[in-house]
Length: 439
Image (cartoon, rainbow, N blue to C red):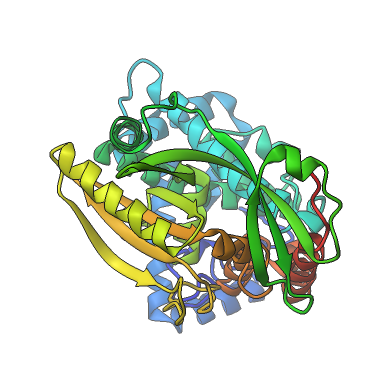
């Protein structure tokens, strides 16, 4: 279900819904013909009416008012606003299971504000980089971290429509950030991530290398002119790479590799371990039209590994299982998908390509579930550069095709044609990938 659909659970954000931000707002206007038409349309849709009443009730409880016209008092009276803010913070603390004492609620609210801003900054810096100026957060919103101030700003006629929309958007994103923070605390994600990294250091990586030590190498690759698919790749040393002059459709890609022991051999592997950050989780909740991170975010902790070939991939998976057993843990694999040697990936996520070559599975290690994505050198280069498959193109497709781009930057507020921008960004990434990379 699209985040833009009438059934979207983010009803407050729809610019064609009952909480749309209009060019102007008045809390004391007479019941005009336009308002009568609005009420008639709302009553014609019982589902929308129910959502409207629920959200209206939340607004009134948070601001401690009985009607929208009462908000005018809070906009004018700073003392009354302060009293109501303290009560609202207590309600929010209870909502997100945060201790209301010792200033923790204020610290957490600032964290949620930073996460909300980070969502927009991520899109500005990558997927929508060509329109970074158009979608930049208004100064008034980036400087505001308190939910009460943001909510009041939505109803403040002194502010431009774009600023009032961004205030509402920030509230929605902060609410998701709060839900994610609460789930992370309940699941103790930080501790699980630390234990997983310790497991790799203690049980998997070669004891001959210090913790965090890498061996530098380059992948020298040749790519097809039509779609930039990797046709040939070899590993070379940095000193060899520095003396090379690349030919057309050749690339050099730096990799930092660790070693693991497989029998009498030490096998190099490039590994990236990550804990999904809150901004990325917020975007995933939006893409899935979901407010519960337990349901939507199944890849809290992930590991991507790149090895020289299929036999090394098999040895790495075996080593993980053996290392877990030596540590007294039974590692079980779930949801295995293997397209490294052919076949099509069963793409279920919006924007995914069925032609993506990878070995993907989830591994349970005690109480920790880790998403593994394992590549050969060739599939890794396809993952980054091949047209129609590359991760950057996937990022563009899933943000635009899921409706998230239009959801966060509606056309009537930002005057942006998202379909046109989508095509521009796809072409931009493809042209960038063709530029040769020198060491």
